[in-house]
Image (cartoon, rainbow, N blue to C red; front, top):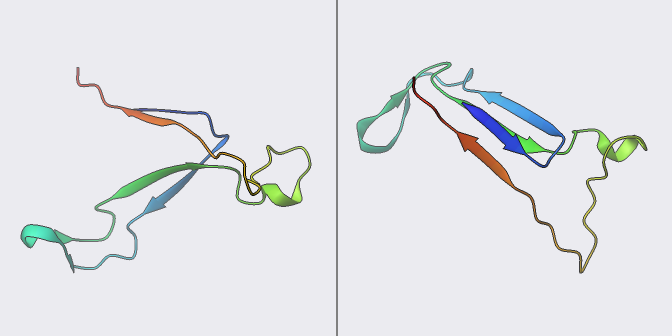
Length: 73
């Protein structure tokens, strides 16, 4: 899997808190059954001048792109 983005950071969430959670169509989710890769600005960017700025002001357009590519050999 490749993740291509125009944002500087990636936040990773894991399903460490799941414990038999019921999902759609009878699915049951256990601990570590999932992972989420969320592209974003650095979490503390607002406090660092040298980090890319995360602020979108009124009237400005917010447009970003993230592509997830999957390949099977």
